[in-house]
Image 1 (spheres, helix red, strand yellow):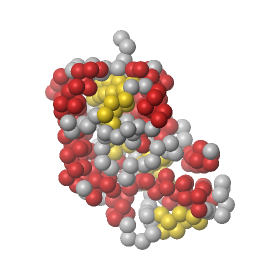
Image 2: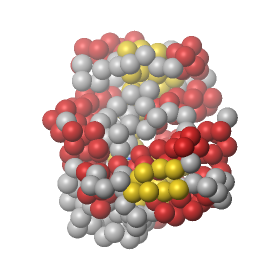
Image 3: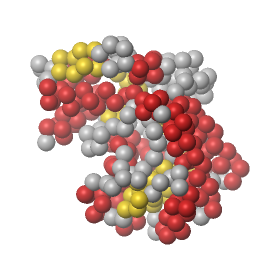
Image 4: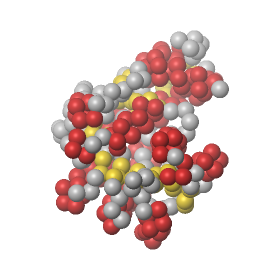
Length: 314
Ligand code: SER
């Protein structure tokens, strides 16, 4: 059977790269990019694009009707920092967007659904180091609350209606192609741009703030590997812990200095994102992803830094 894949929220940091990879794997015509905003020239002209608002049920229904998708990726969301500026909108988009997509995917018999969760599902009382799959979870951002609730809905739709929904708890994702979307981990992208432009960066997270991170190439590959895995291997239907590497601003800065020796890192004071970062894990135990679908990251800090700098220099 040939696949027809919808990517909802295709213009964001993940969507931009996921659409490219899926188009390579499944042919351009079979991957429909969908967003509320017009995409970049390449995405618009390489394959189908539709204006879609995931909160508009008539609009969604039309798209499911037109394409009869076999796979749907729902990426439209408000992230942690932007979510705190508009909690009700974050809840509405993150929750109702998911419920709409789960319902239409059932109604139109979509074979597989992908929905991203986040390390933001953990909170101040979760273990900080090597945070396990199952532990205390007390998220204190509206983003984290919506992701934790969303995970429960995904598992519910799988258990109750046998919907094949799959999910990953992404760490901070580092990439150079598309701008990050208002998260707490965005400093780890801004730092590269400023290092190359100005030779210095003022970090909104303080020294010693260690967070789980991953290079986008690994994240996209892992996502597609999870979606390609046989259904009977997928034992977690809430969302998988998923790890790449962990670092602090000063460790990243030291690595950048190997390429830009005069680079200087400073710290900005009193940023609300610090409290969010402080409530999150420093590192993640992802042994279940390793066990169930053979997950293994490829990018360590040196490879990530080298790739970011050489691509941004171009
Ligand atoms: N990168 C995201 C954020 O900082 C985490 O899922 O909000």
